[in-house]
Image 1 (spheres, rainbow, N blue to C red):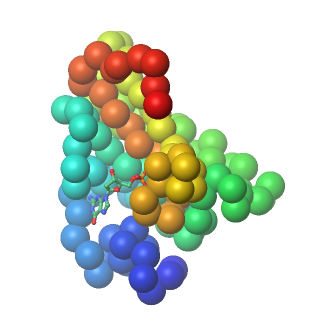
Image 2 (image 1 turned 60 degrees about the horizontal axis):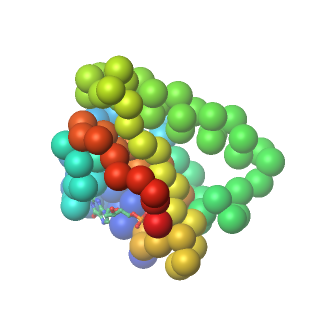
Image 3 (image 1 turned 60 degrees about the vertical axis):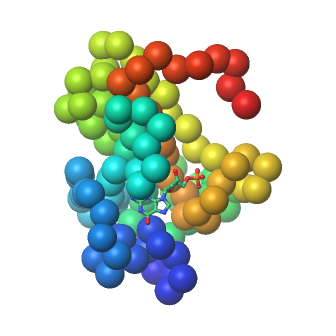
Length: 115
Ligand code: DGP
């Protein structure tokens, strides 16, 4: 828990969000600025700043983020059509909230190339 982190505040219940899933390792809630019909953030309960600060002990947690993403994609009805998972990392990566998260984006055809 980091006092100034908005995602830590959502995890603790201090800040509100539309939560679609939670367990002992992660929380998932709808992005405040959705870019597609489905835009969910999957966030570890543990405050990890970004992919850059991951440690080897975090490997099971990262696997769990993807399993939850797959489950939520099924529930959102976007598994068959496909979807995009994004983890922005650092300033050049476009990360604006320094608490690791996976964007689950779908419900429309994604544009390519990225960037
Ligand atoms: P990124 O740029 O990859 O760090 O993504 C951060 C995302 O978090 C961005 O799409 C907007 C979203 N976001 C920021 N603050 C809040 C908030 O207070 N509530 C919710 N639901 N989403 C937020």
